[in-house]
Length: 326
Image (cartoon, rainbow, N blue to C red; front, side, top):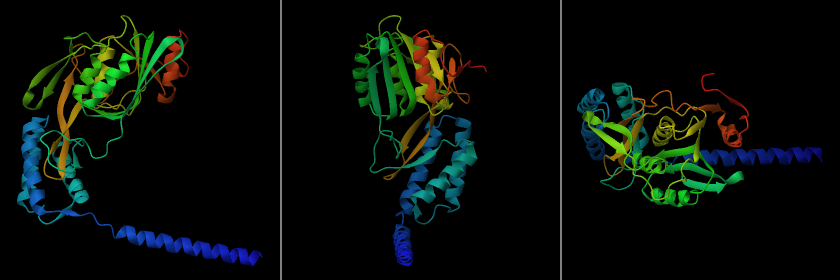
């Protein structure tokens, strides 16, 4: 019986190996369709135009445009390019010319006059609940990109207007737009108050004002924002603004430190480019969070930060936290 069992086990192992090899063979036959040279050339020419026009760092824009023009004239983009190969080549050229690794070649379907989002968005979600002692809890998860999220945020905040304190959990927050972050700040900053100055390409400047809100919190409601090292961009803008406006206490770990706002522009039928288009200057600090991130007032491991925040709200010493300068 033991020999028979070993024989069956051997046959099953061989069958698994055959299935694995067949699967590998099928996978190896899946070939990424190449982009026609005409589309690649048009996309690169459009990229050169957009970099000169919209890329935040003007001195670097000239270097990037020159590097792309040289590569194009040398015939480095002749032939049919699979998307993956083109992505690596273009991003490496742009990174080498500018020292900026945030450029991202993206795939999409169809042309649009509006900025497009990255091809791998994480589904967004807004969650609210009332915790003990009437404390409100608002969690932002995933990517909140399009304008419908303004309405979703309004609905969520409408259920939190009477809370005794508000905990905003941004630990899993993904991408968001500058306009949505500005809308979010309107819940906490009076209408018309200066939030920040935005600086765009060619040193164009614009004041970002609070839009105010129709669903304000009760006056004096304490606000706490919970951060992790993965929070970036628009949500960093929101947290940094509320911290330095003395409107929120930041708990958790420093955010990623991406002080540039990103946009995505169409290049061709199938391609778009993500790049930095604005930087933010806070009126109180005359600086932003680039590099160091938003520094918490109370530093905790991200997975312990909500519990520590509740301890503070309940006038207890927060567990497992350290001062931000330790």
